[in-house]
Image (cartoon, rainbow, N blue to C red; front, side, top):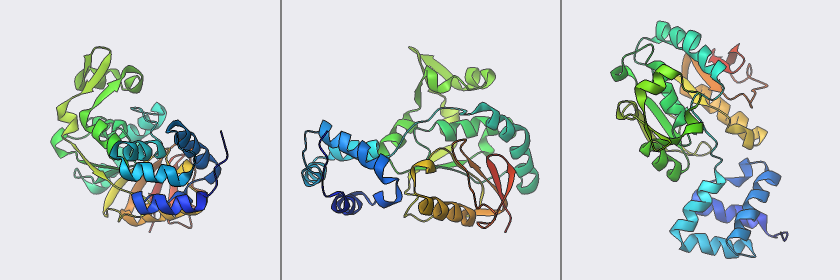
Length: 261
């Protein structure tokens, strides 16, 4: 694969087109992925590729989809979901009551917010549950709204919930409308868009590993602002918040952080 010149200008062009700031991503990793995609589209320069995605809606959406890393599954890291079920949810409900405001940030194809609804359904009636789910990529949001998943995606769902809330269709699994109705999806860019406020729980897992340390710190600080005092942030097993105290969190469990101020 030829080495492409002009990545700095390309980053500016991409920001103007998509409002995605490539400076916030680890450069070597991201540039390699982008260069591969450019080669697949038979372009030999960044300018040529920018012209292609500017004039072709399908190629533009392919680019945004490729840029945003979408690896997702239901109940990813089941032991952490067990902790959420046995300790975190009961604690939040005892503190804040039944109307919890829950935000699934960078929700990808919907596996995570739908998992949250199912997990919460053990504690609250479905009609009391509302999950706000956001992602930068409109294609994955569209897929999430369809709610059809491969068998591998749902293999960690507890058996009783899988039986109750999924219908098997030709080897794939369709999630029930009862669960889908409890999730509100919206496009959102973690790097530039305003954050919701008054959240009791924010779930953002295995996404920020692709960001620079500066971008991560900024996002964790904004999550803190978005949480109520004693609200909880749930992060992924691939992530850590080194300076969590300075950012206003206490560490309650390995991947759960509580806003302390």
